[in-house]
Length: 520
Image (cartoon, rainbow, N blue to C red; front, side, top):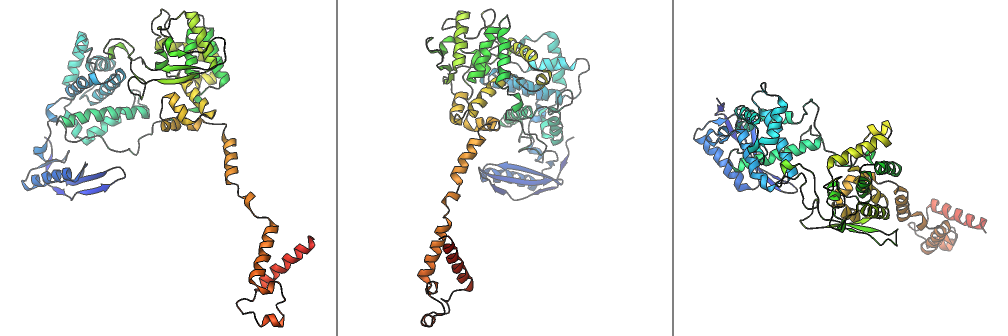
């Protein structure tokens, strides 16, 4: 039975005026436990506080776990978490991309496994996770589930708690702690934690809009133990020119598919294209100069990205999902300069492969799309062959994406304005600087020279002769004792006490005159 209490205290509404918005908070206490609910405006806060006061006047007991009146209890106890999660997937399916669908399924799978009333014994845990990820939370394949998967999902439905579990703060705390760990007990990456919280926030927001829950139980703000995700590039992952040349040369020397993949990797290294953008390039998207001018720049026009997400997550059943460029409106393009070395590589590639203007620039062995597994396998082989054991075990060029990072870092080190680099990279200037600014080197001497020239004041100081002349001029203009003897009778009668010089001033004038006589 859910514990209740009549020991309720309700305080007045507090107002917090922040930099971005003003928050109105209602605070109350049930059985010694404090609760808080925040609202965007005063009317909402006052209405909620009035409901709490009305419940106390009527003698309504309050729930100890949620702090709400018993008649204010949500319908969470009548809805299974498993059923609600499936309903969430079905509602969002048509409005999300393939990668988002895959990420959502992984988060819901991990959450469901952590919420099970008991761990599976009849079924292997890996089979339960696969059934949840690939069938239960995949609208396209749910009806195609095999019989053994259907039995597993029925067991999950029977052993899944209701949505009321989200109203228990202790249960929510245990769930979040479980989601922050991998299967082997090690912490997951900070970026994965943030991604999980983001998906769960969307799920619980839908639960609130459906009146299944009254409030979002996830903690607000940054936790004291939360780890900050790394948004900057690891400088150890950037290959230098010699290392990059060795890796690309090794790829080109491979007899099967080497020259074709060499052109692909060179596009990432020279033009900073994302892998999904390079795969989507057509021959007509490249503007190459004439062959009679070999050392001129060309241009790549990027307009589409085709990330590899898997056929089970796309509407077409194709493993690649075609969409617009990242962070840009549909139909927008991004021109990128094509280095003269890349011009020669792409021209030889088009001629060797006998590609037509409408063909894909980079194709598979059979003329189809270039598979991500082939790209990764070739890059791993090149790293193993060309790098030393220490370099191979380090982050050096471990990911194909590091070629793009190397190109962008090189552009910034060459002194190209960040706004121009951001336009070529398809990033905003703040994101570009926060990601690559610490990798910019080799410009400190020039920058320090500029600061030295702008702030140097010593060249503006007056010379010693100028200071002496100014001092004598001031003494002659305002002090008659500077040119005549202070002991002259006629002068002493006309000099007031305030005008009479201080002995220190007399010594300064005498020393100055003596120094000038010595200099001739």
